Length: 306
Image (cartoon, rainbow, N blue to C red; front, side):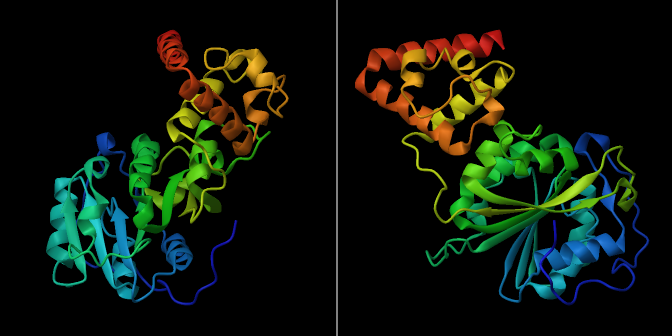
């Protein structure tokens, strides 16, 4: 859990020198980072470069924004809170490298930030953000719709979420989030952030995570949607053995034919194991449309039950 070594970053007082005060809003899950040592450590982990195009999700009062702008080529900030958006616009808009987008990140299309003349390079955006706990997972998977344009992502998240993202088979935190995020990205838990670094102080510890979309997926699957279904259903009943938890998707005979121990529980299987199961199901559906319809019906029944 180390950051990339890099000189620079904030070492003195906060760059925000005005008297702006904002009451944190619970409905937006707002906790504002104020610890300058933590801010400096985050900036060094991100290591912005003069040619970088950064996208900051939820800049808040600009604790990171001002430091990022000192080092990057361009920064687009997406902020939902109208008051904070107005404050950032009034204090930072004089910098031509800064652009503010007021709105919900879950509805934001990252492609709107790319050059419209067709010259956009793959992996040309770097995403950073202190994500509200209540939308952190939906936000990450929303952004992964645009993974071909993303070089990396650095997020402040609840520590438990970062532990789940980085967990390996057999770990108590290992589950659906671990598997699907690791299918899309390499995950690196950089360091923890105590609640005292924020105002208001949250009741839980936070952590910084680095996510880097894979140039090539670690496993190849015929149908990503099927992989998602397998993982979701397996971990809905994680205390059951594999043959029991997946009975609505695949027969015990078909599962037994794979090089997998079907007596194991879901948390003991690797991403490669789940890919084998998903591909077996996909091939079965392709060979028999009737089987595919029946499987979908069983999945719907499982969703209702759970």
